[in-house]
Amino acid sequence: MDEFAKVIFDGKTFNLPIVTGSEGEKAIDIRMLRQKTGLITYDPGFGSTGSCKSAVTFMDGEKGILRYRGISIEQLAKHSTFVETAYLLINGELPTYSELNKIRVQLNDYSLVHEDMQVFFQNFPRFSNPMGILSTMVNALRSFYPVLDDVEESINSTMLRLLSKVRTLAAMSYKISRGHKVVYPRQDCTYCANFLNMMFDTPVRPYILDEDVVKALNLFWILHADHEQNCSTSAVRVVGSGKVNLYAAISAGICALWGPLHGGANQAVIEMLSDIHKDGGDIDNVVARAKDRNDSFRLMGFGHRVYKTYDPRAIIMKKACDKILSKMKINDPLLDIALKLEEVALKDPYFIDHNLYPNIDFYSGIVLRTIGIPTNMFTVMFAIGRLPGWITQWKESIDDPDWRISRPRQLYTGLKEKKYISIEDRK
Image (cartoon, one colour):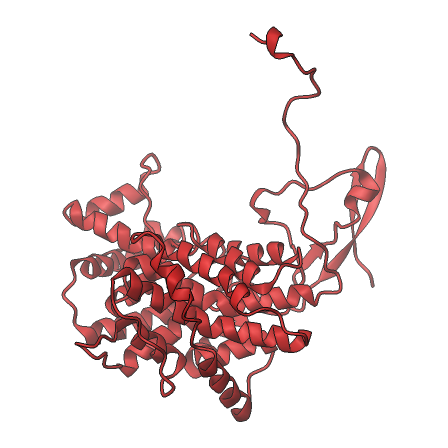
């Protein structure tokens, strides 16, 4: 039986259909609201607005559930790899042996970038932000790899090129920023191992791959692969709705991820720990300030806008964090402060009552620092992990039969009509 929501306005009643998702969540279909009533909805931040139907990722913030294509993040973290997870997101099903081997070969084949792109890198100012560089270079890929005649082949090739080349571009930007020789991809390395080798291998000190470090990075990217209609994913969909090429849409996602409230949160955690260390490392004072509503100080890496319980990704990342810290035995005062903060947050009633549990940004920042990733590269690492989700959401949106170019409404609060005053008469 069809369900409707009644809107009563100006003495008239209007029926708006209720649509139901596969997990039972319901939404009011307001597409005809303005046409029927002359009204629009007002929802800053779009916290109560569904912008699309999607079969990619399911989240339940109250219960702490996250699933990709129906498979729980816990199962993927335990059994899957980042490449396999990327395939699952983009294609809707887990790959067979032959499909996975084919994709691995293709990712290796596409891993090199055009030598002329190094000229672009070398002309950026030395201290340019890596996210700005990455966004620009991804957009530039469109010039080096134009669209093929076969549309399906073109889309598949473009998606694989992006997945493969983004890690190469990221590692290349790091090497060039340090004035080091660029390290090329290796055919014998997995996706994650290849990235680590391109980042840290040098002619004077060959990088020795550690399987636990590779696994930690693999896990980090799986946990970041998609997260429903967040800021950067929405940016990819909005820009993509103009029928731009995939490179441009992904570039927009990278720019949206750049900010400290989204992709920069794990970097903000390390910067906060550094500030605490500079101020003497007084944890009690820090916790007291965090509880004081009149203090502008905020603990970064605690709580989450969507999850009203423990972030399921944080539970998984914490285990990886504990393992990598135990193995690496690094003497780092920032990591010591982080562990003390974690201990307080997991026991203090204030943090528990306000759902201020350590989130994935807290643990991922610690893991990235421990394995040697520079702090200014943290958001780039997030972008590489989120790339499969962006690609998937873009692909789903262009295949959507209800597709329309994004064009939000506004509630105008400016001046009413006024007359133009000639410059001679202006005071």
